[in-house]
Length: 234
Length: 322
Image (cartoon, rainbow over all chains, first blue to last red; front, side):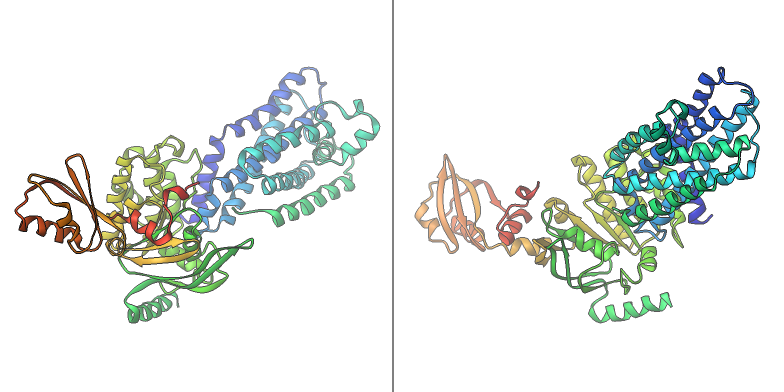
């Protein structure tokens, strides 16, 4: 087996051993269970919120903590003395975290539809595309946190600190209708707000709003480039 | 092409006596501080070469330039005939590295780490054999975070060797270990050399360098202040030594003071302490024998590498720790 596939296998095992991974998978399901009984048949609002929470936890909490810890523990430096570059380790990490977020989201869709009688996703392809674009945008922010944080612990702290206001503005703590209009409008264009709304549009079958997708792409590109520019290997 | 480069390096090295590492006029600055300042040395095949000095002397930076982790500001480095910056990928197949401050993920198991690192190399060693050799067989399935300091260190050395390197760079490998674990590690390092691997050992422990190294470069403030065998460094110390004994017959201090090389003669209780330089100790014992004065508890206080370091740098190595 080549170094790259071995690396993927070991990193996947390490990801699954991380208690944070279980947390990111359980919390959205927990939200569904707690609030699901109050939701009406054919609901798409609550499951969209729950999926956004899951992606937010992976992107803002797991990604930066994993990357900053790898740097802090000198694992990236150690890798750069071997024939395999530390860039390979980072790529494998990001792809695995993306797969993990996809797995958690797929589980959430299945539980929503099968157990809580939520509506079946109206446009599955659009939803998948939205998921990939939105998750990339959220991961870009996670990467930026990893770039500026001095340690794994700091990255974890910044991630949690950033998560709550973003979740609030993104309408994950209360329906955005319950928010002051200005805040709701601002919130709509925060990364988690965009993700929630765009996923909801695809799930419910509402018209795709190109402005939301374009803004997510802009986040992914701009924040991703800034993060890559400032990323420190040691 | 790569094989050719090595052969070329070997050819050139033969002319200078089989050097596997050649460093010439290496300099490196960080933010206005000259960390390494014109360092030159060569390491020959099969030796354990020590790089000794206090923290901040430029030891680690020098070694990291040779490993290709850092780009020198000026000077040239060849390791196995390769340029560590330009030929970094190729060189990484042939050298093993243990970094000073590098850990593994907490939840990785010992066998997973070895299996993973083995997969990075063209022609790795059998990591199962390394497990046995480094006394980690019963820790095969243990997670990294559950290992003791000594076990972690042995795993790092095993990881440095898993690519079957020609040269191993080991940086501060016994820091944080208890005396017994250090002794064990030293024996293992001797075995690494016996297996034909050239070892570059960065250390700030005198006893470690004295025990293991064939030759030592003493670093201070970014420069090499001396380079010799440990015993060569010690014998070059030009400072007073002491000879102590308990005379069993009366001794005339003035007679002893006239012996060549003796600086002073003092007494504490029933002990005579003769201070001197050079080969005064031999001269004093022959003078005692000539006068038929038997002595007991004769002790010569040898210089140590610590004394050599103080003599070279004017400072004590331990007081530089901070």
